[in-house]
Amino acid sequence: MKVVWRLGRATVRDVYEDLRTRRQIAYTTVMTMMGILEEKGHLRKKLEERAHRYRPTRPAKQVLRSMVREFVDRVFDGSAAPLLLHLARDRDLTDDERRELRRLLEETKP
Image (cartoon, rainbow, N blue to C red; front, side):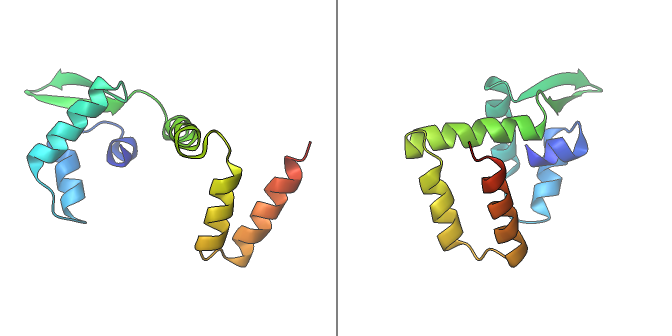
């Protein structure tokens, strides 16, 4: 998804070539994953010059928000607090990140 969002539109070959610069991956794996993402409604394809070009159906921010919400619901029974505590303890947050987290918490106080 990140590759298609960055490129705007992409063929399986485009995504495969982009991913291959960072890790080993089979073309068929990329093809299968893009097919699954299309079935789930995250991608839409259109035949252009003998190749299917895929484009995202929703902006990255919207999908990320939805995925995080689903993850919190599934793993933490809908409560974000355990996830936030875990991340704050297990990640090396910079001083700027800690300040930003404090600011966000203050901003969202009832």
